[in-house]
Length: 154
Image (cartoon, rainbow, N blue to C red; front, side, top):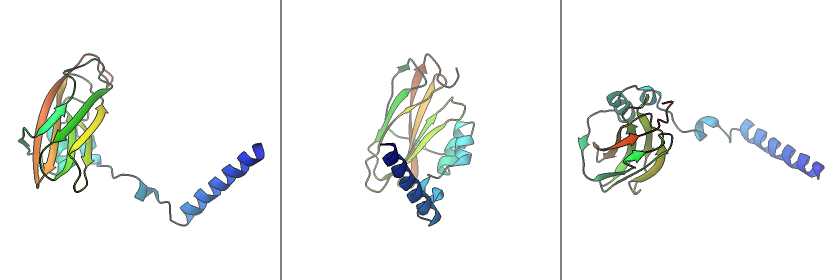
């Protein structure tokens, strides 16, 4: 049984090395792009500008944020964002009082439903801001979440 295990691992390693050396497995093509400036921003306008190119977004009632009013543990706060805006290209999620406010940016494909659901980490009570890019404009909505036990070292 050990011989089969050894041969299986040797074959798998050999196939991976062959794929990497022939250029079929290139890490740059596999990994997602990382927006250094947006994720390093320390305030909300800088984070929005870094992620979306502009920090001017108009309020919209067509964006719905579903999150608890009170989060007992800031380490895992469930958040769902949906929108009835047409042709939403991206949904950006900001936690206003986190050390780095930009939580995530979701790029959506053409014809996708404007809906994302995730769990985020919040350091303390603050607004969650959702920004949708639609028709070349930015639209936003916010909801306050009260955190009783901080998840970002608080």
